[in-house]
Length: 517
Ligand code: ADP
Ligand code: ZN
Image (tube, rainbow, N blue to C red; front, side):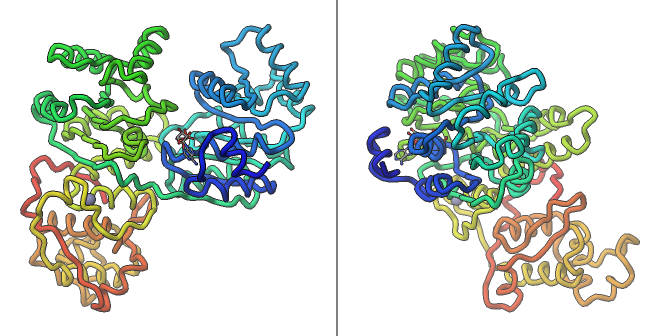
């Protein structure tokens, strides 16, 4: 059977999406692969289909025990024999699966990472006695401290390459930052992995950020336009979800709450009602959504600020899987940033705290953008997106723009003169001709010293931020972030390309929180 035939036979689909076909070819030929695809992109098929075509067993590592059952049930329904082993099963059930594995009747086995390599576990030696054809690691970013969802038990997966040196490994994630990618490759010891990065853009979702003032009234107005639609509203706290769901019911909406504190029965009842369209609105904490495959979610609202862009993007990505126009609305307040800053600090782990705070800063910056939000998001995921999207709230609002070419040239040449080795504040001090002792004497003699005196420090910060979002400057991810040129900077420096800035008078600086750039 060819991959296309299997796609048709088991899934009833006619075409591969994104790079599914190339990914499948790579693992079928025995190579390792790193797959980055947005939520809903179709990652599961990239290892499920090879599992069907390869002779032996495919082991799937997945972090969420709660989702395994659903995944396995739906595979069995499509005629692909699958099973899982986890702590929720009694020994009889486990024995049954083990004997089916021995007789080679199972194609996919789902496991939680903690079970595998623990010292008392004999699972590895048992698995080694079987014919294993492929190892798939879902949510692979959980192995990295740099990600937003680090799970220490994932670190044990490093043993796969020593225990099963000849078996191809496919690692999959929807988190795309560079450090995380590198970490996944290193920690799993992937061997010459082919990397498949799909576009993260979700063109049918439009992004809006509203100030978090009278948010309940604003929400009612929003919902009024979506009376017959399904949607998810994310809140930070469990209590918050219950209160909001009750308030919405009092206004005549059908809304249920979902959070980790509810009983298993309540959770699955509420989830089922939502999936079956009996209740339109799910008011939830982030506990809701992973693995939920509802195609007609028309909107996702963030009633409170998400902790990072990765989470935000994953959550908004649950809207519009059917490709129809959908909305992402977020309520933003500086107060939420302060609140989350408190949570971001991990006791006794400076490094982790720093990463979480940086991710929170990036989230806050997104909310205060005066430039295309989609462009920022794509840029965050290292994806070129040169034009404005035309469909986010910023693009749809008329901002006063002006020709900022000269200002841009000044800033870029200051960065060049400083050999791309200084941070934003230093560059601004140089541009403004600061007399501060912090400015080195030799820099006071540079031609760029003081060429930007007429612009205030706050304005320079906003212009430089715009240069970064426009991809004309980049900020390194070091302990002391410095400004560097990008391949696009050259044309501006040579006067071959003009730059537009948004007039900063529009920016409300009073609520501005100091975000290091
Ligand atoms: P992810 O794990 O990347 O979030 P899934 O693997 O759950 O995404 O896939 C999302 C949805 O897209 C599923 O309903 C899946 O069946 C569907 N899908 C995947 N590949 C294809 C394809 N080639 N054609 C049509 N639908 C697909
Ligand atoms: Zn836009």
